[in-house]
Length: 178
Image (tube, rainbow, N blue to C red):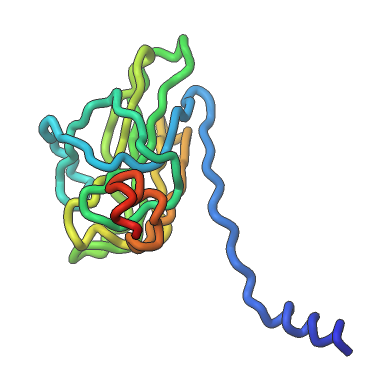
C-alpha cells in the first residue's frame, strides 16, 4: 500500500526540466563565464539588432569576478562570456546572440551584434543591467555563431537579487547579505 501511494505521488509530481547544456566547439575556447560586478564603458558603437540600438565598448582583458550561471537581477551587474580561438584559426568574425525573457515595448527576446575574436587575444562579451526593464528573471543565454554555425552557448539563470547572495557578497561585501 505504501509503495503504491509513493508511486502515485511520484507520478503526479511534475518533472523539472534540466538546465540547458552549455558548450564550446572548435575553434572557440571558452575561458570563463559569469559575473563582473562593475564594468566601465570606453564608449559605444551601433548595434541595430539590440533593444537600445548600441552596445558599450569595454576592456577585453577583464576577468570575471564570479564564475557562475546564477546572476542577480541588480542594476550595474554585468554577465557573459570570455573566450578565444585555438592558435592557427586567425581572426574570426562572429555574431554574439543573447536570448532572454521578453523586454521592451516590442517584447524583444533576442539581441545580436557582431564581434571579432582576435587569434592572439580574448573576447569579452557581456550584458549589463542598466535599466529596470532589463532585469528580467528567467533563462538567459549567450551564444557565438560564425558562418551560421553555433560555436559556443552559455546558459544563465537570472534571479531576484536576494536569490544570489554569494554573488552579491563578492560584489558588495559581506554587509550586503547580513
